[in-house]
Image 1 (cartoon, rainbow, N blue to C red):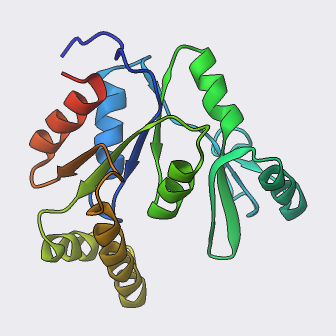
Image 2 (cartoon, rainbow, N blue to C red):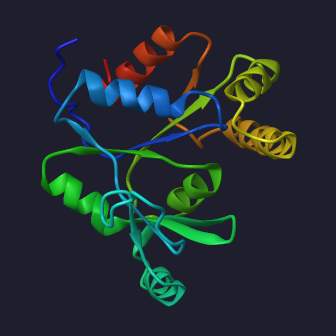
Length: 194
């Protein structure tokens, strides 16, 4: 599309239920505008997996170090998944901004709630939702990567997230992903305020 850098340089926070296409939309934005956007590297208390690189995939830290960072208000958001802590540090966002890049964060509902409650964080929020709950369930099942129990957990969480997204003032934009090209066009327009 050949758009210049967006005039609004605040971080873009993308949220929505698992399987709705957030990651795909973010990837399309990065590919369409190389050298404009950046993601951040999260901190985690889990052990590194084979092939993961410190500082690229994650910053691997002890629980004690993670707790210290939380107490220092160093994260824009943090959560616990499968018994491990994960967090997005304010420093990693500042580092990307210093390089002239606009940060795009793919964050869950809990992270959005944390960011919204911190008056020091100024960001733009977009929620990606499925055209219907049945469509979301079909997408999750078609991935064939999760057990039935995991799918049911994701669907239960999706109901909560969709209900939260309907509250006024939570998100600046809600995009219904009922077709990838259409959803991407709306996402890009939001980012660039076209």
